[in-house]
Length: 447
Image (cartoon, rainbow, N blue to C red):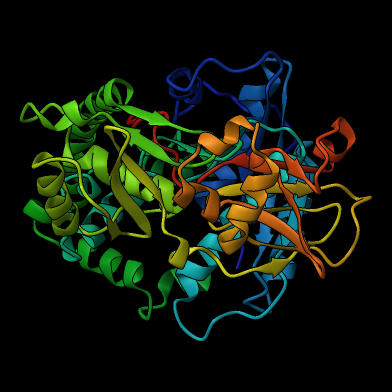
């Protein structure tokens, strides 16, 4: 139930703890008159973040939009979203409810809800050209995350906890409150007469995070929240340094082609330590369209093989790795490509975790998206003068192709549009290599 005594219309004093202006300096620069999106569930953390971000953006001539996701998993969720909307209206904050539709799985509810939530938030930001999405993870959340990962045997990267900045497609996800405690945030809300909602799932021991939270409440000093948060900060700084070095290695030895394959210079493996196992794992995840690399021992085995010379041909993590033209090629494995599925004109979709495809509203119905596969040689003969034919055969076969009942209609990555290549047909289907995990990004950041 809500706590506190309603809302107040008075302007917020950003000089009160936490000092949000100072916290936001680390995320600069921002555009003039910034428009920020803030994920607001109605809990104390997110309500405090919304009010703080509202005051910060207003002082710069900007604004925020509060986004509340109704997962459709609890009957009271709609009423809670309406309550958040009322609180935001009283503060002069724009508010939007994003509703998930469809069935939910029988298990793994929290992971499912999290993925659905971020997808809805990111899609809204992309549609409304909002560059920054703020979420309210705070100090206790960070400590709990480290404890959960430690219990699962996570490596040093996982024990660095949550990053302050994450690049997600078209938006930057910002966590400005990672160094702020829940007690500070609730004191801030109380000082400004703002209520919040208590989510009953936060007290349900069926969820791992709740059990960890309860354990930490009575934990000895060595595993306390403060100790875990400090560990995350220290390992986060170390991780940031490593990722800078990994980015340098990728820039020196790796070429990423817009059609979605990678070439690695063989000299990367000549000198020990010149090219790391982590960088190799990142390549495999990017090319395969996966969020995470294969297991460490599998990457280690591949690394040893590459250090011994150009590979003949092997597969790992949804990729094919082969020596060709004096270089190491990492391509998508055709057998692992997503199955064909129908496309809807006027909609954008992600395919195979690798490509974003937008089909014009005027495009015909009945088009199916899938890998070019066995049709690659036929298209190749029709495109003899195309520079795209210099692509390895394994790459061409794994490219996205549009088909109708008669066969291949378009292969945008090859510039093939039913035998024509005029401007109108090219614009009818736009495609870009946008893997789930980019090869490089902002780097791990803790502020």
